[in-house]
Image (cartoon, rainbow, N blue to C red; front, side, top):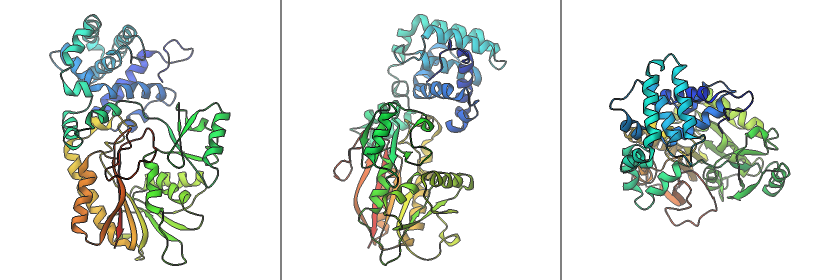
Length: 447
């Protein structure tokens, strides 16, 4: 959470607001939130990121208020600072500081930055008027869907069409903070024992799914017992479905271990879960990643957990460059997507994406499916998943694939899992996942 401006040795609030506004300006220019916040000094990053996430969750409201306060959009740096203050102060119950304090410190931030000094008086006038007329100004923005739901208009309209009964719940969920969910490494411990270890450290958790524990309050991962010993990984409850869905009940054809491919593997969480779920020496996993830098994270993940896999840097859509010609028993395709299901964890996604991205990503997903399906042995499986709530990247993608591949059969699958819901598209009994991200799963068997 943000550091109190009065804490001994803490950075003043005006400085945190400067850095938060700078991150917002970067995101508006097309930089991902991860990169924007990574640029902040490590000592200041936790507080700035906490403020920044809150700004991104209420940016639609902030921009609507700014339009009420200013006839013209101010220069980018000044606008970012003004919208930062408005996003944090518009609702006194959600505000991390008293609105008056935020306004005072935002004006101070403007004065102390050469890039906004010339607009300091303008920012001061806008924010002082906001304090005087807050209720009237907020009411004036209530009819604007982007202000009400804090998502781009195209995103709201698409959800209305594709999820007519659930679109409001999805949008509301996106504006909440995601829980910290752990996956227990059953090769090293069990859920009950690890839960007792957490309780001994005064950390409360509730079980979710088969091997998950959801903390009632998040903590830095290094502070949790067993992290360095590889006793757990951080993984959302919905993402923990992948390995069991793909491997449960599947057997190798002969005496050799099952050949399993994780086709888009970085950072390695699902790769490790595949190895944890299977009996020791029962599978051989090839972890494929096109980005050489990201592939190193797979090695780091597996090393901490005491696992090993064959990590290959290559393009999954070009098997001729890396495949040895021996079919796989199982393939996990966690395909690149809009990430529209994980907005709670990455609130910048909604403001970075364009509607045209969906079609482009759907083409890439279809290409990956077409390239990898021939690598599955008869009787083998391919699990297609995305962390998206949009049907073009989920249900519609699989419908098109099945129409063109008569040797494929859809096995019982969760389909679209919406954020914070256990609703399944095809009548599969709910797994008690609790609070989770949006995902899509389709399990395909080769006839």
